[in-house]
Length: 401
Ligand code: ATP
Ligand code: MG
Image (cartoon, rainbow, N blue to C red):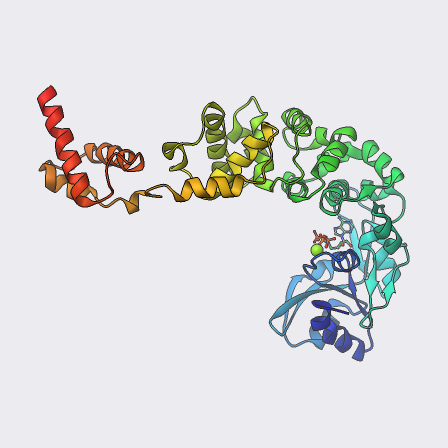
């Protein structure tokens, strides 16, 4: 046994001391078997939420109706969920009824994929009634039970299957895959935010090309946000080496292949406004980058992260290697004389004083000219040099008038 399970063992022990069963379950066991980084350790138990609240001093109700209580233990939080079964899903997304049960096997049975339906006791023994370990070894995503009915119950599972392809570099079992094609339309019942959430994870995975080809082949893409445009973009971007790109870089390459208004496109995915702003700015500069190499003036309005994202996508589209992007752009960026207006050695007040003019919109323009001259190394970024330059400019202007 290893961390983070070791730290949580006292919780299992305590629940068992009170006569109930308790196991580690779900994604953490899958990731343990895959030797991947383990995020949250979830616990499943035969105790009811009320019983869990009586056993532990510090708990928070976070989803009692689903059987989940948050247990606070040694500065960590653990979701402890009562074994449950789910019956009838009329709306293809939520069970009509959740029942608390005392059987681990039935709890594992309601889980989506065999790889996610493995439990582990406090001694490290696995309970694996659906041969999830074997599927993990074979790198196969397979529903627990008949794929058709599992996707009919909850259509989000289809998006989960495809994002796991991207994250884990697994393939989808043939029956499960056939059911994807058959039931793709049920994605219509799922809230956009939940589809986006899975798609974002897909875009961060390392087997994006395979996952995207499944979205296209099974027609799932037709039931995702902006279906027509998304299909065009995903088809086009699959011709490039996208597996190593980050999520933001993926959005940028998707946007690049759009003909419509990028803000409208991203809004339909319900992405947060700050992200929409980031991506649309990057897109604008990507189009500029296609016309010419970076210069002080094109690099300056961006931050380093943006410039790296833009250059990475640019080189990907050019089918060039991206291994040196970070060094190339960082060097260029670090050689900028100033990185922001705050670093400029003059302020609007200095200008008013030197030129003896009342405040007005001219200040903004003058600062912009100074900024540009400093960036292009036409003048040194010092008060004296800038003062000399600006007075000189004014004299010229007066002479011309
Ligand atoms: P991640 O690493 O992304 O957290 P995960 O498998 O832990 O992946 P969660 O959404 O945290 O995914 O869910 C925890 C567990 O709950 C899953 O491993 C699975 O057993 C079960 N589960 C989650 N979503 C569903 C679903 N839609 N249908 C059935 N079981 C589900
Ligand atoms: Mg999880």
